[in-house]
Length: 379
Image (cartoon, rainbow, N blue to C red; front, side, top):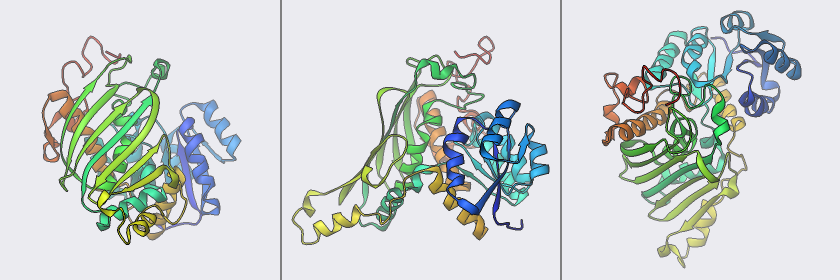
């Protein structure tokens, strides 16, 4: 594909996430991008969206938009159940794709997307913006370098609150449209950050519950994870927690690294605590000062990730949070569901095309999968 400047961008799905997150990220790029079209099945909404943002191409059909607008990059801001089919269309048309999380409903759908990459010559990246903040990138580099010592114990918590009314939106809380509950749709960001810090995982043991919300999916999950490094971690995902927090803690030989925030972090949200054996050491204070200094103040955001994506586009390279780099987070999500619903410990090697959880995150398990009597309704 011949690279064009500015990059021609189209937005598919003109609801809240497009307005609150994607438009500001695009506007922050200045002349580097040009929004040439938007598409939505709601005619009045897409007309208003385009009028408010001076977008020339107004469309209600994706195929027509791809043919007429010829975008270089498409932001998919539609419900998750539509992502795989729409991403495939865009990729086969030669357009790069930036997928809102969750990227799709299953590993099977993710592999369909990557197959379309190969056929169309473009790439699809997932919105995992929490790994792109300056402080997060700095922490990942410190851990990878070994400067903080070997990782030992970690905790990853996404304890958010979503009222009953939140699930009155028809596609929420359903397997066939949202793909899963907080494990899939909320905690996926923090879990992606945890993987960025600690690398690949090897096995998972988990529980899940439908404790208080009228949904098909879970509203809480808890997991224990072993990483390839040997480190052990706990993960909690909830939409039932009145005091909301996103929290990551990694205990290493030389230090404890902590992040406390909600929907996005800056440098001050990270803290480093030196191990007792470093207290009073000649270089202890200097090392801790270095740990706490990322060098720039770039918050975790769609803007930060979009900049990295466009850099990869300019270099004609696979962007971060795509291919295997995006798949491993969905693998962890799948393993949590498989373990919780089957009562077994799950290894990455278990997630094969012959496994029902590869195709559907409820795995056709009684009590979780929709039945003939419940149909598409919440159980």
